[in-house]
Image 1 (cartoon, one colour):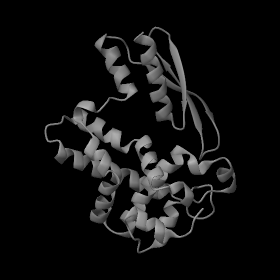
Image 2: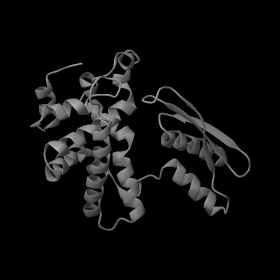
Image 3: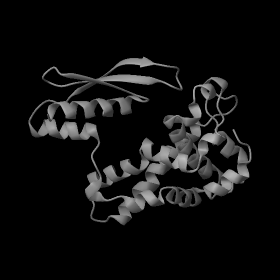
Image 4: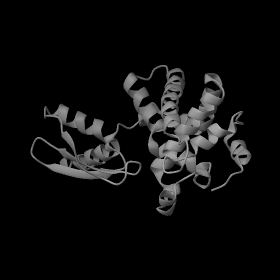
Length: 223
């Protein structure tokens, strides 16, 4: 854990008027004091909005579906985790002893949340225009690389469209097990097809587990 926040602000390309907002954004709920979940809530919404607007003007001929899939590629957890690692945010996180011992500073879900929390903290520290500028710098490389023709549909959408094209009922997803503490849970989800096949998968959120289960179902039915 490092405390030279001026150095981090230089890396981020934004200087806080209220440094406590940055510190809160780096604070996991397992640590004492104000944590970053409320900032994450704001940052998640702002990130989606700014990326959606940028894509809307960058790709005037793209359909709603293509824009949605391109946005998903940019704001998905895997992308945010990669950005967090580029800024080496793991060394700045404030974690409780248990979370620190279990390697929480390297956990993708925590790094993903911190990026969203930092976006929220920049917004509260400045204004919506400065926050927009900050976000677009964060995702600049990803925006430049995105292509409507390569905006892949997520596994759940692919599975749904495959089944619908064959006039088969949609799959049924069900959470069959949840383990871990509230801030570090693992979900096990089943995906049941109309022919009785049931595929199971785990993830750090229900959404991720469902996507993994759908991916397994696609692999099975396309064989």
